[in-house]
Length: 491
Length: 96
Image (tube, rainbow over the protein chains, first blue to last red):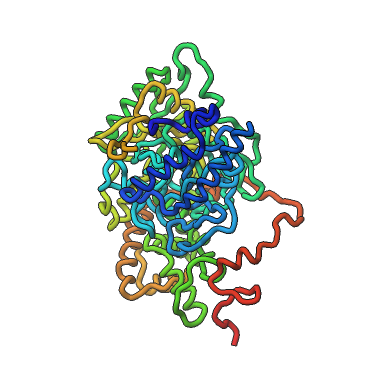
């Protein structure tokens, strides 16, 4: 039963081989059994989930089912869901029960998808290891002494351990792709503006983008079909015709399915700083892509290295502005004792935010402050342009850019917490994609010393269907994406 | 350059975030590591003539018709507030 994809569940539901209630109970049982070992979910409401499943079954019986009606889905705790605690893994919102639905949740509700629970994450999505959660770290199902990656660590771990068939996630500097790589699952960060940010708690608004995590590229396409599309309520939502991200997947192609595809290999992704085991798996993945008909060409993204400093100015600057809303007045945490109003703000915010969030707010406030704005913030924005230009130039000579998603496999819990600079470098291959606003996908491509390795595909704007197709063809030729950690095999 | 303790206090005040004396030293140390180890090298890059990029898409802000689209949700919204009275949010006295 557990070796099934969302697509297969969706078909089984349609044929009434299984009911949504049975499927939801099955996952809720697994969560009850295994979540204490992983801490992937931080809010569950089985009654509410089962009520949704019951409704979905009625809808299927009435012949009004859509593609995802009745399938259970985990939501990253960054997406507001009416009546559900939506904490962003922060003490600041630890008691916040959302009075409204995010657009993403609303769209899944409209399709009859069952909300299985809210997944753990780094506080306000700031982190690469899921150790910055007010509710404690998430553990990697492949080795519970290790991190699952972050910030969407709960979503990635839940899917990897089959506590959910799929999950939503968000990606500001790699937070979908990096945990997908470290946990051995598939995830896609779409082009900026494809998935509505309405009701998705803001971290760095010019970089944040929602997307799915699942076992397969096909499931990601299915989920993206439901999540994406223009939304009046998000001022940066792109008003363009609705796409079917499955369209390229089912097309029958004679000969080699990826014939004609030109994959660019940036020399900056294949140089020093990448673990041997990760690099070996990446080279093997490339060999598979070549067998499928793709050609590879060496390219360069000369300003890649600058993406980390540019990001760690721009993201904190936007965060310091976004997080100024948490003032203890309208919702969220308020310090129990205080004097005047400044004291109330100061105490509320220092008690409500964790150390990493406080640090980034301070950095952001500094780089935006009088006298430093030009030197730091404007300079970072200019460097951002250089990075985006590098990608435009690269896509003149190739269709897709590929390489390892991360320089290492999952690291040990606590290994990098004392050294933020080292922690930040684990996003070296993913961050530039957010600065440019491009789509990026990570899929499993094997193991190094028992830990999953992820392979990243980056495309031009709006090339999601192409990235998903390439990953899908890879997954038809390999079975890395179906490998599951044996410790969570029991039913 | 690195941040001094006084500068950090000033920034913390601007961000309305109290920093306890116990935390001040380690916070300052970490922030300076980030600035010196990570951000500083970027400042030397020649970006003359490069247009700053604020956003991934070159968009102009959409306008919408000036009509009511949301219902009155005051009760639902105030139900989750730390302190309210008669439809108002309560804060410590600001004007004597």
